[in-house]
Length: 388
Image (cartoon, rainbow, N blue to C red; front, top):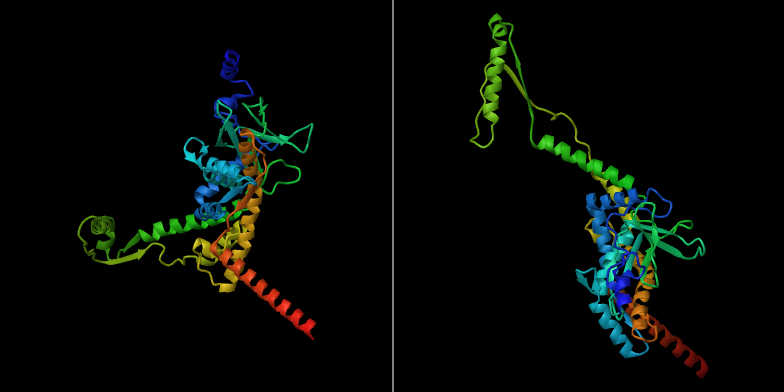
């Protein structure tokens, strides 16, 4: 027992997860993914995109919510109940409960950065564990030089990365990874340029409204050919400026401006034509929506479309959600099998995802009804043929 306490007290021990402290918890480490030095900059860029472009943040959040829930099935119903109770009550990151909270954060990270990492943090009794959503900062993802089919996750200060002992406790997923890279690609890949142009248009609109909404005036006084006007032109200009300033002061009552002589007052910029931003903004938003796969009506865009086209767009988006589910399923199975293994039970289980929307259930019911009708008519036709 004393020896075990001594091992747990050592911060360099590879079994630090036994104490309930995540191995993936990094405070002052740098961001490095393999040999790609620009990944830290990409992380900052994609995070800034979600902060500055509301449609991107809304689209990714909606994808996470629409991915839906699931339940685990086991051949033995007692094992299934144990597994279901664990998934509902597992602690996540110290501030949430339930597997849904873990998967929401995991998928959010996966969509934003293309790579998501988590950990099953064992408790001291080695009879249960909690889930931890790890930050990508301070982690290095690389190929195992001895086994290129295996992905190594390391952590540590600059130049001193230490491979983390996985032992089946590290949860890792990559979105659409390239063949030569161990990590994935962000769903926002390809959108920085389009988003930059969109934000530039919005900034220009804001600047124009700041100028045009708070009007600026040009007051011009033209002295006459009279010698007296020319002699006192400066004094009269100062009087006009003072009178105009008093008339335009806000916070008090509205005042009239009275001037003698040839005085011309114009609004600065009134003759300029404001550029129409509706067409370019819509073109840019179409590019963004095409990348996310969301139908326009799901984000509140009332673009001209037909009911059948909207249904087809919803069906295509449903296939996108199935794609994300296929990526999450191995992670969920890894968690479920660990629960069964720690309780000495067979690791046989299956993940059943809920239907995406009620529309899917309705369409599936209609399809089953039509198939049943077709089978009935075929059976009747065969019976009539045999009777003849």
